[in-house]
Image (cartoon, rainbow over all chains, first blue to last red):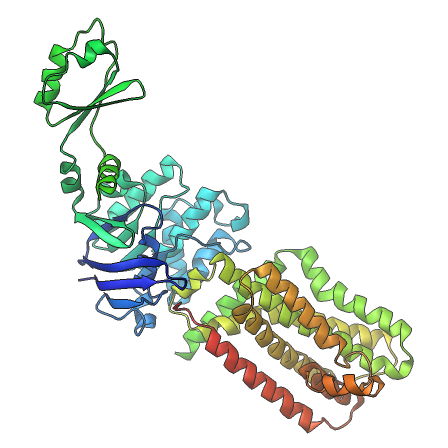
Length: 299
Length: 246
């Protein structure tokens, strides 16, 4: 296993329990997405795995090493994107990435070529001589991500890599991570952008109040919703009266939402609706966001 | 490997040097204007016999200030804003970080010390030999190192709010240069204050500096006391400076 965590407990001073007996195994080359509400323990989990935070109890093994005892060796092979940070605002983008590449243990030439590679990868070429303090929030996030990607890491620990990025950047980052996943890089990614990371994740781990409440592949999580199509109609007695028996639906905010288990069921509902009274309808596939919200509300 | 570690210390020093060199006006103030603005009024006011005290005082104020206030602010800022996370997740020893931050600060603080010496030499009647000038610069670096350790101590054990840590560093700086006979001979201090001043490392540094500038024998007891200060502070910093949080 690339990452193995057993019975992990972290209690902060003041008695706040951030992790409450977490077990987690991530195989080599696997992409694991960790989701959960704010305060669920996602960041604490990543900080323990990266060797930044000592757990109160439990065992951690990362790339077959102890992240606290073998820190120096391990951190040469692991890239970390913290969730909260401030960049070195008085460095240029290039300096920021290059200096942190040297501090990763790379030689000068190797650090230069790695910095060039990630500058290109994250489309930072145009701003590479700009001071970090003059960048927008989204570009700063890309610089932070770039420093995590330098050095040909075997394991990436990315805490909220999509936060603050515009849709185009999110798509680009998703593609980069997807590519790294294909190259066999192991990654643990915490995120609230489930559908983007879910495109390439092998497993979704749902944390709630410091406990793992569910772990499954994204498809299985979706299937657990019990529906594959969501049909949204304007609310009205004439619509409600025509919904076939056995179909699950909810009414709120002037809309009726029907949760349908198959395309056939959708066809059956559409057939009985009166086109004169139903002037608009929206058909959607459920997303991982829907599945996550449903799951978190249940446990 | 030594060469790798030296490279890392150099890189950290570069990262912490550039905050000032990228702000030319602030650089001018810290490295030139402030040291000279302390030196000139004191030279005008003080009788000629005290000019050595004034020059050594201005020299020490600039390096003690750079050491305590600048390092305390940088390190507490790193902790408060989690900027430190980028270094803590790299194979970098805390000692390398410490040396890098100190060297980064020294690269501009020592310019201030040099400016004080140059202005002193140009304006004042007493002249230093090259050996004396180099000795004073070495002493300034020594004083900077002790002060930087004090700045680290304050940032590591003091308040998490970096602004408060900065204010405390300023209070400490003024205490260390006001109660200690940095600008004036120790004999001018009233007895109770003199006894107190001997507990401050700045007093002993000033005594060494003045002896150097006057071509007198260096007080060995002052050298020993400041060395003890340095060792004690290094141990305190080493104990508190860890990447892994508990």
